[in-house]
Length: 407
Image (tube, rainbow, N blue to C red):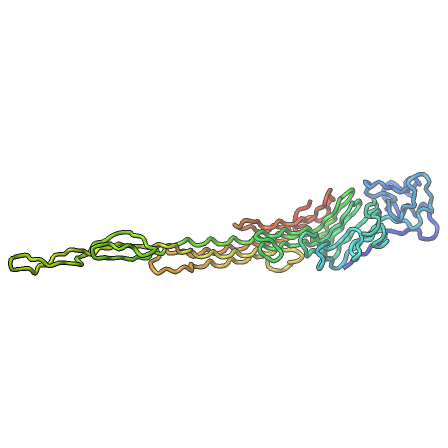
C-alpha cells in the first residue's frame, strides 16, 4: 500500500542552538552524560560499525564536522534517525521482476524507500548516485505493520538490496513467501514440485542490522510444491493361442501361413482297393492310404493395459495460496488391454496399474511431499535470509511467528 518515512528531526530548523538541546536530541538520555555534553562528543561519527552513534552520519548531517572545527551552527536541520512505516498490503501482482515489498532504493514505479528525500534521482533513488542514507550509519527502522507478499517464484515477499548498516526491521504484520506450484501444474516443472519462496531477504548485511519479531508477527516462508505421482506400470502382456489342424490322404499338408507345427496325427483309411481274397471271392477291400495331418498353432502377444497417469502435485501454502487446497491429485485408473484374440488367451493380458497419487504441497515453511516419481517435492523457502552476512533476530521467535529456516 505504501511506506512513509519520518525523521527524528530535523532539529534546529530555526532559532538558537544550545548544548542542552543537543544533548536532549542526540544522546537519547544515555547513561553517563549527566547534564553536560562536550563538543568532542558531538562530532559527526562516520564509523559504520557504531550501532548508535551520538551524531550519526546522514545526508542531513554532512555539514557537521568530524574534527575539531565544530560549531553549533552546523547542527541546523540535523537528524538523529529515520523510521519508515509500511501499512496495508504490498505485493508484486503483475510484476514478476520485483519483491512484494521493496525496502531498497526508491524506484521509478514508486516502490522502495527514499531515506534522504531526493526522489528517484536523489541519493537514495535508483537513478541517483547511491551515496544516500541507506549505506550510512544513521539508524533506519522499518516498521512492517501490514502485509507483504509474493505472487511470483524467485521473488521474496519483502527485500532490501545493497549494503546495509544500522537497519532494524520491526515486524508486527505479515510477510508471506510464495507457495511453490505442484509438479505437473501450470507454471511448474514435471514431475518435481516448485520450490517455495523467501519471506524476508536482505542484500549484503554490514553492521548492526536486526529483525524484531512481534508477538503477532507472521514471517512465513512459502512451502514447496508436491511432486507429481508416478505413472502406473503397464499391465503384463498375455498370449493369444490359435489352433488349427491339417489333413491329407496319404500325406501331411503343411501348416497355414503364420502357423507352426506342434504335432502330427494319423487317421483311418481314406483310399482302398479291391482284390480277390479267394477263388470265387474278388470283392475284398484293402486300404492303400490313411489320413495324415499336422497339429498347428499360432501364438501372438496381447499387449497389457496402459498404466494410469500420476496425479498432479499439490500447490503449496503461500501468499499466492493462503486458503486453497494443498492436496495432491488422484492418479487416473489403468486401462485394460485393447488387443483382440480369435483364439484362447493363455495367459490373458493384465490391466495397467493405477497412477500414483500426487504429493501434497507443503504448508508454510515446509517442503512438498515426494512420490515414487523421478523428481522430488519442492524445497521450502526461507523465513529470513541474505546475500551475505547475518542480521540478529530478536523478539518472539517461535513456530507461530516464524515458519521456515533463518539464514
